[in-house]
Length: 145
Image (tube, rainbow, N blue to C red; front, side, top):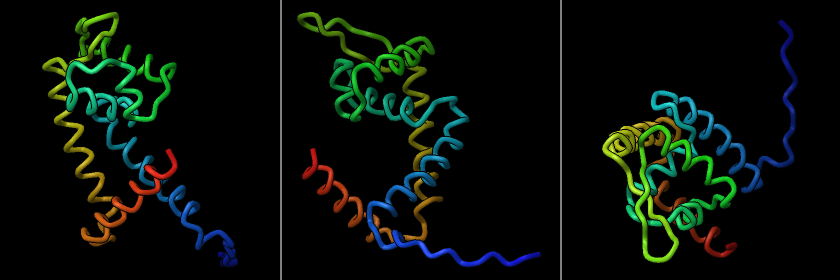
């Protein structure tokens, strides 16, 4: 067996590069874990946001997740078709979204899956440093919105 040469990575010290690489690993793990509930990370996140914010309109749900209106519509349609959410009329023309009992049960499963995923993927980082990293990343997001 031929030993492969070490490849120098001139980007290895760049924060954005490391974030992208970690994100790819984390999303692959999460996608695999969510196969149990047959939902993508985007659909699972959408269900969790609806469960935490019953009655909010679709546009607000998409905005909270950073998903454009055209992209959130098929996710909402699928969740509705699967019997996980339903719609309520709000004042004006808006329609609020709520989890059904099936949606609430799936949201509970998803929270457990995500908890296990977070432990699996990020266990090498002490919990206090995880909290600090989350806080720092929230600052970056807020500054760049």
